Amino acid sequence: MSGVSFRVFVAVSLDGFIARPGGELDWLPGASPEGVPAPADEDHGFGAFMDGVQVIVMGRATFETVRDFEPWPYAGHEVVVLSRTLRAADLPAGRPDLSVHLGPVGALAADLRVRFRDSGRAGGVYVDGGQTVQAFLRAGLIDELTVTRVPVLLGQGRPLFGPLEADLHWEHLGTRAFPSGLVQSTYRRAP
Image (tube, rainbow, N blue to C red; front, side):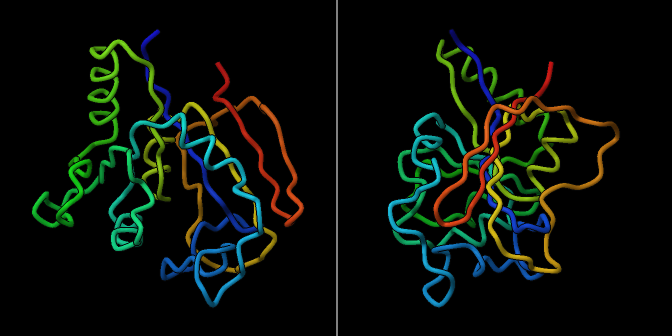
């Protein structure tokens, strides 16, 4: 069976922020050496999630945050940076699976659907980054949301969700609580 599924896997503060106002992620467990340590033996399902992902789509702000990570956290996956200003020449050398798409998100989704259909295989697309997630939601393109709440209140920051033209309804698939205090819920877009 061929097809593509657009998925979000994201951590948010209790008050719904994905980053501090300047984009900092130091409040996330394991995100920085001086921040909150990562819980031992808890990957919160990220490894299993990534096993079902072939393509990662992220916005430029997210890319700028992760571009110099060593080791590259997306090895073995195609990464598409959604940006109107970034060019292929601006991408780091030595990462052949990294490309830029000018958008809009509907055109990118259509391109990916054709590629997966033509290959005859099913695939998962990980949509990452606040503005990118919001754009895919506004376009009605997200099939599944996995939201992990981190027990911290930031008071201000970059929100996960933004304005929508209409309500989007979701079916709850399950919730897990981790010993570290993180709580993760997964939802599928309601038909």
